[in-house]
Amino acid sequence: MQPHPRTRRRLVLPAVSLLIAAALTAIAAPRAMAQVETPPPGARQGDPPVADEPGQSLIIMNDGRRFRGRIKDKDRFELVLEIAGIDTRFKIADVLDVVPLKTFDEYYDELKKSIRPDDYAQRLRFCQWIYSRRRLELAATELEELLDDNPRLEEARELLRVVNAAIELEDKQSEAEREAETGGPEPEPGAQPGGRLSPTMLLSDDDVNLIRVYEIDLDNPPPLLIRRSTIERLLSEHATSDLMPTTPEGKKAYFRRDPVEILTDIFRLQARDLYGEVRVRGEPVSLNKFRLNVHNTWLMNSCATNQCHGGLEAGQFFLFNRQSHTANTVYTNLLILERTKLHGEPMINYDRPERSPLLQLGLPRDRSIYPHPDVDRWQPAFRDQADVKFTRAVDWMRSMYTPRPDYPIVYEPPMVTFDLDHARVEPREIDGQDGSNQPPPTPGEQDKPSR
Image (cartoon, rainbow, N blue to C red):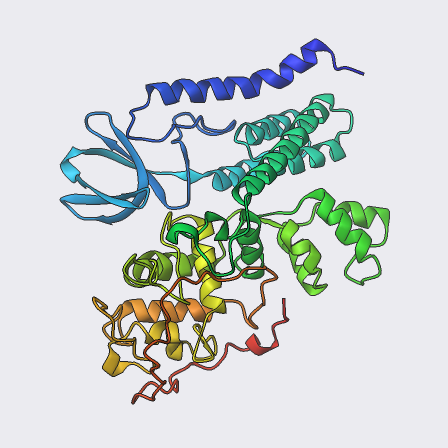
């Protein structure tokens, strides 16, 4: 039965009004700034736009111009703002205001906590806002929960049909794009047509999400989304486990559990077929350390330049350097580091981080266990092991989940022409670098379960 026309209008108008307001704001906004988003329902009057990623701020100039980015440095005279990976300097005298921005996830968490479970009208508006921001899977989950509490809410049921249709359309479009990218004759193994590396060699969004799931610290997790269909599979496929409820009341209550508690059960059951269905709406602490303290600093600036391991002479150790701030590039390079070996030893030594070839290759040759091959224009990334970049890299390695998981991702690291082992430098011991300063494991660390 078709819904009454008035019902349809009540459903569509709030979402449409949000989009119209956002469009008008974009037209009026200065070209220097990305589109200014309309604050979500429930936000205070005058709240700033939504941040693209954590840590962004809105810089409002005296002449009305606005810039969005991450503040890299600030003193009495100057402010340095990172915009799309480029450092831009502003005189403090020209800045009217600096406004910290909230991400969509921060808005979402605050609003969800502020809405009463029995306020179905507000929950529906909340779902409409999520849908207007194209967070389709999250909108579907919220709508499913709303209909579970109020099955007679026809407006929510219609919106869920719209959302599911949009999800299906996006899936088909993504599949078509993948087919277009991989179309044509298969290249010969190891060959790179025209000296270029295919963009399809980057990890997919699903691969990025899966790595995040494996690296989650359950004591300090990022925001998570576990859809109702995933919980239903968990309850059905592991019904005999003592972790799963058996009564109808217990199962209904299980759907309302904190996603972190549900993920804990998934890990305990090692239900790896469900890992990829958990959507991680943020970055685990350890991976954030890799991004900020390793990848976006010395790894890109010293190792992944076009003249080194980011160019056509990179050989068996190639790192992607285009669109280096995207999660697909960051996590692809992480996987390459995880799966690359030097003289049979992994590039990352999680048991003795200071001895990792990845770090030793960045030290001056006379201070390194694995001296970097003598190539033109090479400069060490670290002064010594006391260099703050070196110690932060060690801290990152120690923060990764242990025992180390083997990501179930099929990926062959790219190779070009240059051989990392061309100098055949054998490892050697350097005084004070035998790894004896490795701290003892955290109590209980060795007892952590495998993922």
